[in-house]
Image (cartoon, rainbow, N blue to C red; front, side):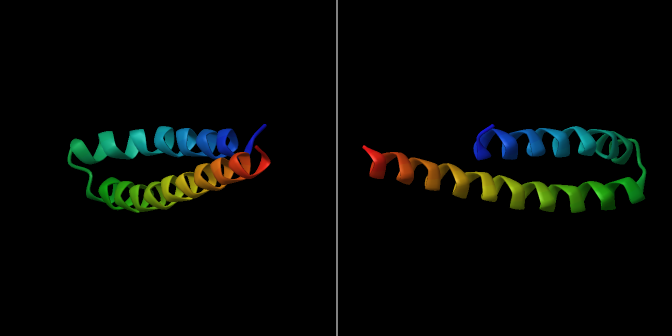
Amino acid sequence: MSDILEKWNEIKVLVDSLDLDLHKNASGNSSAGVRARKGLRVLKNEVGALVKITINEDKLRKVDN
């Protein structure tokens, strides 16, 4: 599988794992809010990594053509 799809699958798993904590936080659980915010920071970094991977893949395709 390509690096792009592997990273995308990692991001989807991360979003799914954040879902429960976000719902708990919406119901008033402060600890879940801390976990959710930490997870969102990780998500932000992972999405940035995905962007870099896609840019590098595009550059490699242009060089090959």
